[in-house]
Image (cartoon, rainbow, N blue to C red; front, side, top):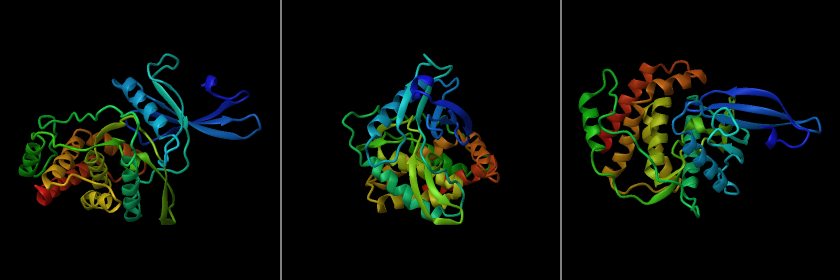
Length: 300
C-alpha cells in the first residue's frame, strides 16, 4: 500500500464493507499531507481459485472504462498473484454513493439500472475482454424444495439446447443492485441517481441477454418475480437490444435463473448481512421458483 500513496500520506482507518461474496472489501481512509483525508478501496480474494483471472479482468476493464461515460472506479494498483500482498488484491479509487437493496423506490431504480446497463453494452472496446463463461448445466441445477417440478424440468431442458447465436457486447457479468452505487436519500427515493458501477472481475464478451438475465434474476429474488420480468422490458425501453426470438430470450433468462439455484444460501446470507433480514433462504428459494415458473409460462 505505501508504494501507492503519495509522500507524507498514511492509512488512518480501515472499514470492512459488507455485501460481497467472493472478495473481502475494505474502505481505506488515507491521511493526506495537508491534514485532510481521501478514500481508497482494497479488494482481496482470500483462497479464491480464479483470483488471478478475475483481478486481471477487473484491472483490464477499469483501464478500458477510464474516460468513458460509465461511472466506474479508477485503477490504482493490482497484485493478481499475491507477489506483494498476503492474498491477490486490487486497489481502486472510492466512489460516492451506496448500494440500495430496499423495496422502497425500486420502481425508480429499475429504469436507472436498465439505462446504465444499456450504456455499458454500447461501449466498443478496441480490445475485447475474454469470452463469457457460463458453468451451470442441467445436471448442476438445485431444484428448490416444493418447487414446480414440471416447470423446472422444462427449464432444465431449455438449457440443454445449443447456445443461440448472438451479437457480442462488452459485459459486466455481475450487473445487479449489489454492484451499483446510488446517491439516494431514504426520504427521497424517487430522486435517486447512479454514482458508480463496481466489481468488474467478470468483465467479458458475450450476449447482452446474459447481463440482462442476471440483473433480472437478482431483482426477482430481492423484490419479487414481477420485477425480474419487468427488467428486460425496461432495458429495451432504454434502447438496449435483446435476442429477437422468444425462445432465445428464454434460454438466457432461464440459464441465469437456474444458475442462481446453486447460490441461494450464499446470496440470501449476504443480503441479510446488508440489512434485508427478512430474506431467509427459504423465502429466496420460493421467489426463485415463482420466477422460473413465470418465465416458462410467459416464454416457454
